[in-house]
Length: 201
Image (tube, rainbow, N blue to C red; front, side):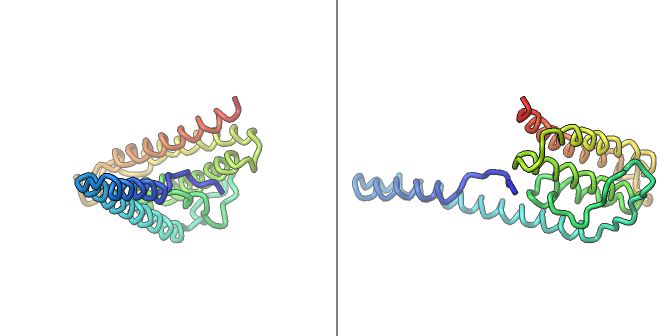
């Protein structure tokens, strides 16, 4: 499976160390060596922090996906989907971890909508990864478009079934929270659609 390509930090560190050693032995510019070493240490700290954050997000999503009750998905609704036995493609990266985890409050009001969103996203990503790894024909793009529209249409259904504010507090606007997370999801899926469409041209 094709994961998002990332710059290898060891390449950066290796090149930087070569410059430091070269400067140390030939020019003895200790100020330069000090600042280069500082940059490497800051870079390593930042990389480790981001890796830990990404792992934490994916772990939260993985735990949440294990709790999902797929039987909540009505078979007579427009989700004429074959429900996946397990969620695999949502865990490839942490891009959608945050909005999915933040939308879990829907389980308290309209669990079926949350389950449907997750299932549709899984199926959308399955087609996306299979297309970019050339394991599926580009004809699947049309199916991705249908899934994209299906995901967005779920937002309106949520507004009809979820109260605007929390039951015991008027402080949190649930509709606004749904809107914000759906915009995050929409932006991410649009980028993926543009990519697969560029492969067809």
